[in-house]
Image 1 (tube, rainbow, N blue to C red):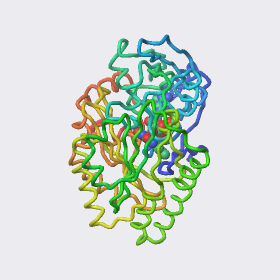
Image 2: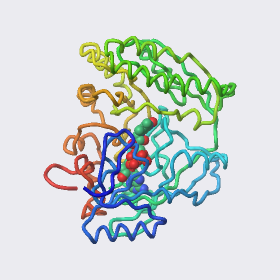
Image 3: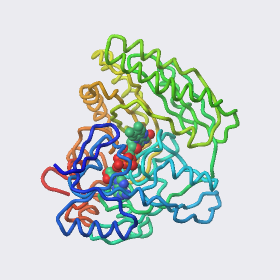
Image 4: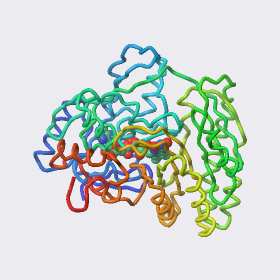
Length: 440
Ligand SMILES: Cc1cc2nc3c(=O)[nH]c(=O)nc-3n(C[C@H](O)[C@H](O)[C@H](O)COP(=O)(O)OP(=O)(O)OC[C@H]3O[C@@H](n4cnc5c(N)ncnc54)[C@H](O)[C@@H]3O)c2cc1C
């Protein structure tokens, strides 16, 4: 064991890298990669450690790119007002959205937190919700990366398109991303409408609900209630009074939620009542705020998570099967199931590749076992040709993932060409990308 210990946010991964280094610039990244390669050592980059999987773990050199977080360039506005913005790849989403807002710009779509690094978020296929919108990797216009040979390369769809595809969503196996050019849109506000509704009603009305810019819902296991969130662009409702926001987002969604989870852990028989209470504790509300304020919520209660992408039109039968399993197993699950949507995209290893997608995310409180629950849901999701989120827990391997991705062989070809010595591999990338007969 080395002196260094690295842990991820959820506590599901601990690693002991030989060294942890925070390079100050791209030149240092290239030197570190060359020297690690020369000593037969592997290299991984850790972003904010918010993956539940060991995506960033290594026993070799662990790079942290927190110092590569500057705003490097803003392009001229396109006719639709969008602009290309180049930033250091280590920038946290929170800092990025603040820098963009100061220039009247925004990310087109976001997930539900902003603690991640931009490079980490795109590398695992992080997404938000919106049936007409893709995940974060679809917002990437160009990249700069350091290859296994220590070369610094600028890549884009026009310049080395294949490498660009692997680099923009490939768990860091193409190289170390040092700068990312994003297509950003003019800053916008959202009107958020949040309301508890009967689950049956939500499942029957999905067609209409998905017409909204961003729709998602949280369904509390073994209840008939779904907490819906519908966000519409360019709204003009009043902002939430600060006191109400603190009461609902901090006290009820986090403080009280921690209490209900502890109670459910101590007295499992109470969980269905606690879930009904949790689903109704947040009353309906409508407010307008800037897009990052609406997309992002504080997440202070620790949990583990698995998320599967399935075809959007399979989501109702898939949820019904999960409902049946929960009913029969009486599993103790005090955390809601989150359901989101995305447009089909063309990113080779994207979970939404070539199909309109529904994301079904199951969570478990960190003090409760997730094993049986996640295994059961995973079995259901496999029957629906589900693709697991690269940053969230799952048990799939390369051999049974390959057929889920039409461009799998291309990704494999590019990976082995750009990193023949597997400098950027770790046990997780070997499990999910390398066929059992050999390393990729
Ligand atoms: C509370 C919570 C909420 C979440 N919400 C969402 C959500 O709404 N939607 C969603 O899709 N996901 C969500 N996630 C998952 C999360 O977005 C992803 O796991 C994301 O990868 C985490 O980013 P990170 O910066 O922590 O990256 P890490 O977990 O540190 O790293 C992820 C991967 O990126 C690689 N990497 C990082 N930086 C670089 C670089 N510079 N060059 C090359 N490779 C690099 C790492 O090696 C690793 O393989 C959530 C996770 C948590 C814990």
